[in-house]
Length: 376
Image 1 (cartoon, rainbow, N blue to C red):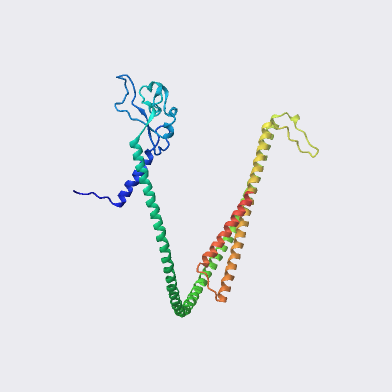
Image 2: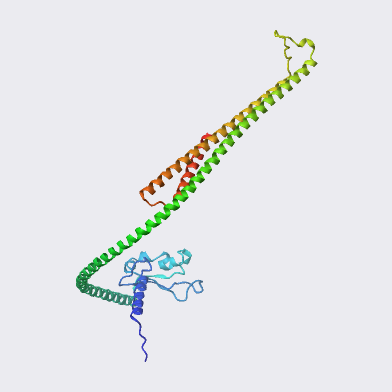
């Protein structure tokens, strides 16, 4: 005969599932509370004429707790039907004949009471075993704490001895490291001095190139200023010349129109002033409009030329301010480099790039400010 054994883990799992599921099903069918130690059958099969549809072959009875069993009105529904049965069928009056008949008085369910008693006994034994295990665990915990205290004391003594050894070794290592650092520092100082001398020569070469470049740019800027100024003068002269030509042409057209009207008018329309010159005769509205339009175009052209001339002057002023700012920044950086070189300080490897960035930033700021002023 073979015996099938279970592991402790499987047995504990099965027992836990049994207790849990039993607790879930031990509920009163009428009120839903726990059944307790005593249970009661409260219904029997339905009493219906033969052939009534919907009547099950085997009726499933309902079980109630002692509180519901002692109160018949709580589980007896309409027509003496079992209230849980009628509720399961939807609670309609037409289903009374299909519901089970409520038992009055109810019948005690002995087999269920015995099974519940066994379940309660098993659960009580489980609780007692768990309490005993917890007590044993607490006792073992106290022993482990005492052992842990002793281990801590022993480890502390060992740590103190090890700390003394580490301190002595650290002092020796620090002495050796100090000597090594001093040697490396002297070598590093020599290397930095050589690099500084080399970098200083390179910076002086770059500064000379930058100075030459800035002088070239300044010369180009001054030439551009002179060119722009000459161009502005030429533009103004051309504008003045064109204005004079437009005025002469307008005057000539007006004189021609006046002469034509003078020929068309009778001689009596012409009068003589006290100075001996003839007065101009009356002009038509067309002639007046043309003269006014020509005069307005002349004034607009003059205003446009004046605005262009003022814009050119403002641009020349911007170029002059930028040139002065570039010279100031270059002079400042040259003074700084010479002072650092005389003091023996190390120069920044990106000094030329830093100077160019500062110059470009100042130029952009001046350009934005001047543009804002011009727009305003």
